[in-house]
Every structure is written in structure tokens, then in C-alpha cells.
Image: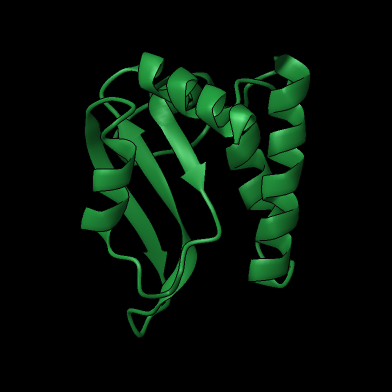
Length: 126
């Protein structure tokens, strides 16, 4: 299963590279590595809110799924409705350009990590 997750992460990174033109790839790669729970020693993150660390952030993102390949016209409610069959959706964050146009990807946050496992399992069967 870990190998499948690594393959999925590599595919997502390739999609992100194409979508972003390579511009913020290191930042996105670091974020995805944290989300997938890998990446060696956590680095300290400076924050005005306090002393959160990358390790804490990784734990916070354990219930977040990256969703790529969205149509530019797909709205948050449609993504929420689709992913609700896997578990309670807390938040859908479709990334947008400054003019409000969708960039074609989103982050879906679930209430619990079991829903993330169901999404990954369903994607593997897809």
C-alpha cells in the first residue's frame, strides 16, 4: 500500500508540475510529502501564531486529500457531494487564480482519517 501511495504522490506531483509550470514545485512537493506522512526529519516552521512544527502540520493534514484534474467549472458543493460518500467532509478548498478562475485542483478535508483510507482504496480500484 505504501508503494501505491508513493506512485500516487509521484503522479500528483507530475500533474502539479504541468499545471503550475514548475513554479512552486519545491513548496508543493514539501507539502505533499508532509501530507503523505514521509520525508525524514520535520523542519521547524516559523509562524506568527506560535511554535507549530512541520510534524504537527503533517498530523493536521492526515485527513486531507489532494484532488487534481477538476474542470474549471467545478464548484465546492459538487466536490463535497462527491466525497461525502467516503465520510464527513469538513472543508473543500478549490485553489483559484487571482481572478477567481479554478486552477483545476482542490484539497478535501475530512472529519476523520478513515475517510481518507476509503478514498485511496476506491481510487486504487478505479
